[in-house]
Image (cartoon, rainbow, N blue to C red; front, side, top):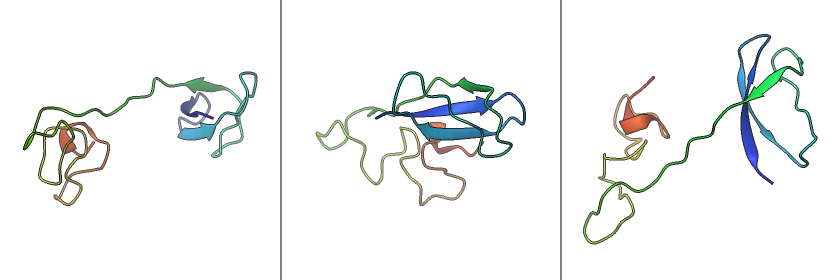
Length: 83
C-alpha cells in the first residue's frame, strides 16, 4: 500500500497518508479538512559510481541526503542542503 504526500488547501500543512483504496479520501491531521491535493513524490537514486558500486556510500555527498552527519544536511534533501 503506497504512502502519498498531500498538501492541505485550508491550512497549508503537508502530510503523508497510507492509502488503502483508490477512493479513500484522507483528512488533514492539522485542521481535519478533507480538501487535500496529492503531491508529486520524489524518489532518490544513486548518483555515480564509488569504489565500483553504483550505490551511495557513507562518504558520498553527490545524492540526496547521503551525508546526514554533516551539519546542515537533512536526510532526503537535495544535495544535502537544508531548505
